[in-house]
Amino acid sequence: MSAARLGLGTAQFGFAYGITNAAGQVSGDAVPRLLARAREAGIDTLDTAAGYGEAETVLGTAGAAALGFRIVTKIAGPPSGFADAARASATRLGAVPDAILLHDAAALAGPGGKEVADALLGLREAGLARGIGVSVYAPEVLAATLDRLVPDVVQLPFNVFDRRFERTGWLDRLSGLGVAVHARSLFLQGTLLAAETPPPLAFAAARFAAFRAACRNGGITPLAACLSVGLAAPIDRLIIGVTAEAELAAILAAVDPPPQPLPALADLATDDLALIDPSRWQRG
Image (cartoon, rainbow, N blue to C red; front, side, top):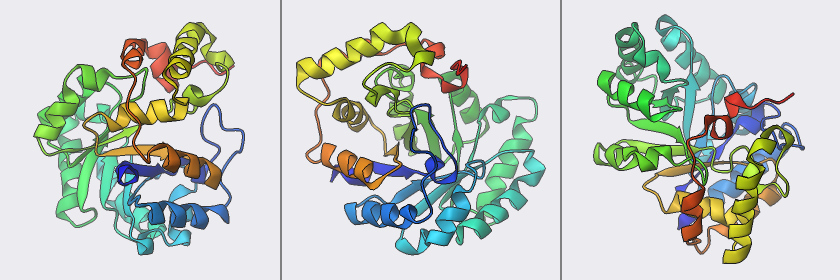
């Protein structure tokens, strides 16, 4: 079942996340319903972070661990504080996380990288997490990360426009190492699903228009097109974010049966960081 390859992102549970998010933060009342619907559909993974506002606390209050979800969270800060940060996350979540990821793997590439790696590995050894991993933003950082340690989980960006980790062979290499790959940004913060290109990305309007045209010509919705490229890649979990039950229902419908990627979508990939790296977007 394709839904089993999805993971539910929870940034929207903690604050109003996303350039196209008009609904704001998901209400506490709606979270239990979303979690129940996701679990019923076969989704078993939640992605969160200590830095996602109230998200960890919201998940703990909703009893996410008791529903049988594998919870992956992220921590940051100096390595001397990793253990305390992990304990704090576990307290908020009401359970020991299935995996704890370093929020930005670039810390492993610096001069203090060995200390960071040792502290991260120490979380697993101390039973503060069943697995450890990293969140990466660029293939070159992933290369430096693997010089320090082989993680249990790697989270990375992947979507129609951003296929750098696929093109450079990293998805296959991680699979060969037995590392679980979790892909975020599948909808590029919802911009790939918008009817019009958001103003901050007007410079890429032609690429967005080409994507929408490819979907129309191929008889597929933008939502299904985004999901299709992720399902076709060697990725263990596609992390999807929603703000309402209707959005989750649409995603579940779009993966049953799993859509086939259109050949034309392969031509839309780019290395333009101004487009594919949301941290570089000028939001005015």
